[in-house]
Amino acid sequence: MNIVTLLIHFEGEGNPVPNAKGFVRSQATGMILDVKNEGLSSEATIERVPGQARFSTMVFAQDGRFWEAGRVDFPEIGSDLIVETGHPGSSVDLPGGESAGSISWTIIGGGGRFEGASGIVTGNFTARSDGRFFDHHLYKIRLPARS
Image (cartoon, rainbow, N blue to C red):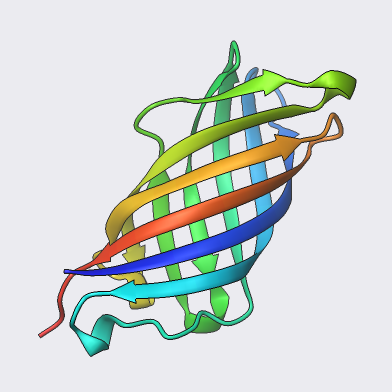
């Protein structure tokens, strides 16, 4: 088993889904700040993920808690991760209509360099009243050993 750790800073926007109370489509672009590899298989090592990452998710929010599922793309290496929440994230209201919160996603699959991936992503964010948000994600990606 090989572990890849990524730290990514995302900036994006959430938009309510028309006629679907509580549902928000969230999209963001992020700068990959750091990559670390643990494990022995050089085939699974990711030396550097250049450029940016993007994510697109669907969020259901209710009473300060939310559930989320979607995809994180790494276009420069033709790879992606599929994520979903097992437990709800939470947020608190801040002055001026802003909010802050945290969430954990389970990695349920991936493609390209992340084929067969599993693991966990933790995130924390601040959001503005206009739907813009700033999000930091820490990925612990387990990759199967390649033979």
